[in-house]
Amino acid sequence: MTKLLAPLALVLTTLTGCELYFGGDGDNDSRWTYCAADGYYDCYGDDCTWVGPNCPSEPGYQCDSDADCAAGCYCGDDGTCEEAGFCATEEDCPDGFHCDVNRASCVPDACSTDADCDAGEYCDGNGGCIASCVCDTDEQAQAAGFGYCDEPRSTCMPPSPNGTCGGTTASCNVTEPTCAAGSVALILDGCYTGQCSEIATCDVTPTCEALQHAEDCNARDGECRSLVNGVNCTRPGPNGTTVACMAGDMNCTCESLYFAACVSN
Image 1 (cartoon, rainbow, N blue to C red):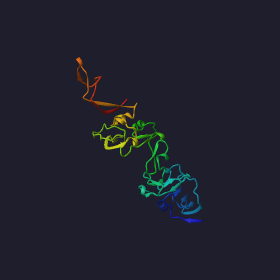
Image 2: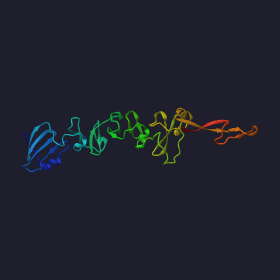
Image 3: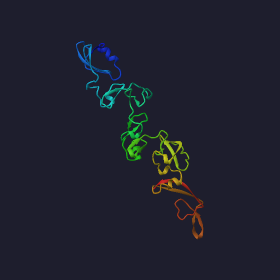
Image 4: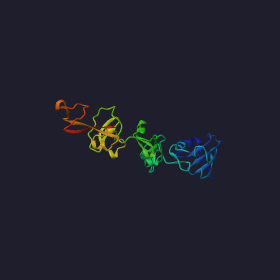
């Protein structure tokens, strides 16, 4: 079959999707090839002949990654560029695809959960695996600027948008909220958010100093210890008398004790 196409200059401006052209400068006596949606064409000047349904292994048609493909296309599992459409937002793409905004192209979702991504990557919620870093502990992840370490996957994870149970408040003077037993205050961008999180659902293990209740502190026996203050404390004085205890005194007897703080051992 012989098919007469418009001059090359026009073809170049009307190509869409993954249609590709190879070689040729548009001169009427030049030889060039054209890969369209219905197959492969061999052209001489403006006269093109359909060769077959499959395109040859020309540079630009086969791919190793999405970046090897034209805008509006992605690299398929068979190593060739496939069309999925252009996009500006996720809503522009069909189900199972998300928008690669850098290429303005819809590409297949790589993940639905973090477990679908390799170690050192997490799922961004829009179907794409985002590179972070590899870690063994929360401290390593936080030192790299992330929220915590997903230790089973050895992956640095971003902080929760609601705040973290870890971190410090050195850059902020917002007052720490009072939290119920079994919970700790959340921190975001160096400030208390005013909200509390149950310790059981925290993103990272809270520090001993973040624990506001004796029962929570004592539950971390061996790691944390409680400091207490006494009320009306006295100690034996000279000649059988009693004197008020001062900080650091020994052998004090107090009317009552109350939890003051939790500290690391």
